[in-house]
View (tube, rainbow, N blue to C red):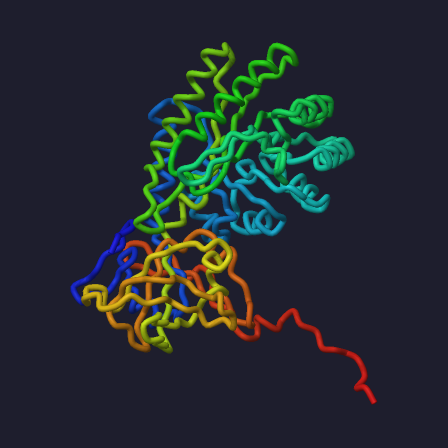
Amino acid sequence: MHTYGTAAVNDRGQLEIGGVNVVDAAAQFGTPLYLYDVALIRERARGFKRTFDQLGVTAQVAYASKAFASIAMMQLAEQEELSLDVVSGGELYTAQKAGFPVERIHFHGNNKSREELEMAFDAKIGCIVVDNFFELDMIGDISEARKQEMSILLRITPGIEAHTHDYILTGQEDSKFGFDLNNGQAEEALKIASEKPYVDVLGLHCHIGSQIFETTGFVLAAEKIIGKLADWRSRLSFEAKVLNLGGGFGIRYTAEDDPLEPAAYVEEIIRKVQAETKKAGISMPEIWIEPGRSLVGDAGVTIYETGSVKDVPNVRKYVAVDGGMSDNIRPALYEAKYEAVLANRVNDPVEETVSIAGKCCESGDMLIWDVPLPKAEAGDLLAMFCTGAYGYSMANNYNRIPRPPVVFAEKGEAKLVIRRETYDDLVKLDLPLGLPQPN
């Protein structure tokens, strides 16, 4: 078993997370259950921030809350002095309910509504990351009507895409996000924004991909953007105060994955920006990054109870659990891979390779296709690792299955931070037909 953070096996052969016995947590809160290792989240957050501090670079580390958004998670981010990215009115509202400092909130999204933008102005958030001309015009109109200043970053596509070990140099014009750096759109956006009296262009933002295991893409993006900033300073007298290089730092899901430590990404980015700004003769901007998955992904474990077993001789053995694509849609959506153990008897010898089936009425509801386990029986507890990012945040009520609870584990204490949905919750928005019975 690969151990993450505080994960350990106790003297009874049972999995513990954050000093909390998973068997006890399952008995107390039921299954399925999302269990988070709070100490690991704190460690990751401090690792990112420490590297900036050690290198003497002014920075913001913003938690990309789309990975997992809740009041408690945003309060944890505030405890660790992170900034916060939101991508919807709902995430912004959650941040406000959490009491998160509004000046450290950044609002992303490719189709923000006027209502969402006005909500951001009302809250006086720190920054809006502008994605397109339509949004830029709305921000200009709102700010002028209110005589209220708003800081913005222009999201640009630098012509580099990176995923895992691959990076691609491309015009990247075929993207729903951002202003293209190569075809003149980004420069046009800068000129338009600079003419708006209440809009302050802090700098540029880019996000080159996700689950990235190397620094090459970030280095190439920084080099290209700083070259453009040097050009804009000489021709447009624009000097960026902020360069946001996004997130996408990879984590280990299975033995196939080999990510870098958070500090390695940050240090390489800083060194490159320092070198390129010095070479270009421009001021070093403040560096912002946006880790999401790399903060919470491997800190989360989902606990299931096993149920039915179907053995197809000479083909496959299916072990079903009491959750599935309703609490983790990533395997069905992305063919995402995971590892798992039987949490109630981790040390038992492996006897077979089985496939973990969800309970949704879909043949594609498979959580793991092949996982080595002891012989599983009904009532065992299956712990599926690295579900902390895009598990709960993408959870759904397909088949009218209630969403699981979320528990934070730290120093032996299990804290319920999102309660389990009930059947009453499922119908609370429903309205009766209200039509007469047909003849």
